[in-house]
Image (tube, rainbow, N blue to C red; front, side, top):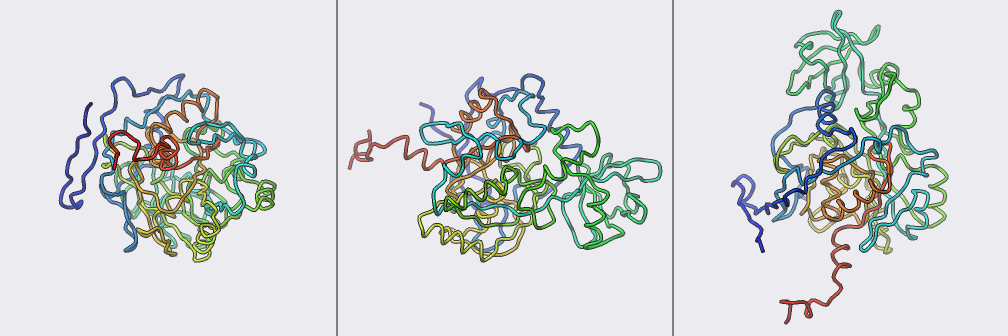
Length: 436
């Protein structure tokens, strides 16, 4: 049997040991039926790509931790899989709760619908939602006669944003970009991969109103629209819980919930609370590195209130499960967790990048959509439920014609620890090599 190999990282990374997993030959999946992963990622590069500090993990407080000792150093190719193009959802289910739901259990993959959640959850379970609101952050501008497409992705201050420009070569420092009468922006920064800084002629609430009037919803490039602006997306790409302006992508797991479903969950005794994470480019950018440790995450702003912390503590005390609705909620809670699992309320930025080997401290279940191959989100769900388990779940979803990505179906995940316990119920003392 081949033993895992280890290497020690530099002193700057505290000399932790990382397991290098070697993928089996012939196991890498390739896109089929017209879905070209490289072309999809190239579209992301063209629209929303930026720089960052290599290898940086979020560290917003003394309680913040990254992946634990010995977390795997893995090849990005390990997270590839085949996906037929026709399974990429172009519209949400109607009504929203009719979206399908794959429950990943220790010994089974069960097919349901999101509408079945009141039967699948227990009294005293707590659903945690992200209440960010997506801004129409895509703008069409002109520099003289030249057209420039802008996708805002990170606020700097009340009147300035970082954005991705296409084509960025037409945006020089000091240039004025005209968007609409009385609404323009000056280029104040130039970064890598098409990123620029913009200072708008409006600020605060006036700027937000201008974005809502002249901007378009920043749909991912795999959602195709013959017309540049589809009015249906203004509501379809916004959740029931959207309250706080700031996101440039939707927390898509929450898109499945309606007032009717929330009423059924309440009657069942399932509670809910909210966090806020303004979804930015960091969650969805393509991974260009060969190994996961070399990928760069953008910072995203989050807020965890004292009320949410209290609700989570009460649910745990009552024996309920904390169910993160979406990866943004999970990252918010994990970024706010101390080593012992206690949550610290506050507002900060996070660059937390979760890969297999990470030790989760807060979340008992994860409700999330199906994600892109080789994406940080698929890495996160592989960390939560196990890579092999998620590969099996996604293969099942493809076979059963589930719909993928932002407007697609969902899965309810059990953590890898639970899966491991269920897989081997033999007492430790009776296992080979485990005698007293």
